[in-house]
Length: 142
Image (cartoon, rainbow, N blue to C red; front, side, top):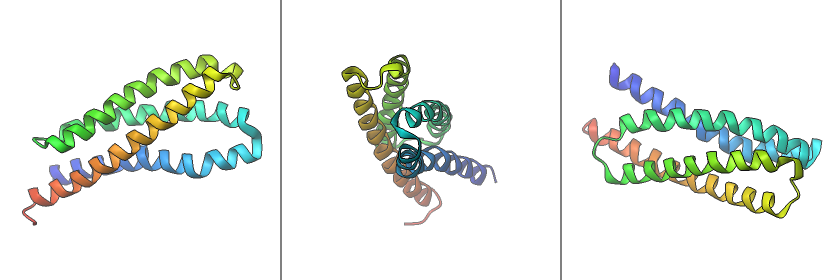
């Protein structure tokens, strides 16, 4: 029962964090930008990413307990953690620059933030795949 509960928690955290990120980036941002404009959507996104980053920190901590002795999973996790730390630092700087969201510095940092978010998302996809495979192996399935 404990293994199932731990795995359920891992899956739920990944769904909320990574699924939330994907839905927000693919649906909410384009819709919000169309309806309220770039500045309004940017202000909303700044606060939503606070929540996504908090969930991400919890998810990464729980995932660390799940990794055991898998170099590939640890590499993906480590990369995701480095991206997360970078995203937190970039987010803080972007918040400061938000008043002038058309400046070159804001634009360049925001672009780097988006690239870092995408890299982290890809690392988490691979980590999820490798985790599911590890669970099958642990359960004695080929």
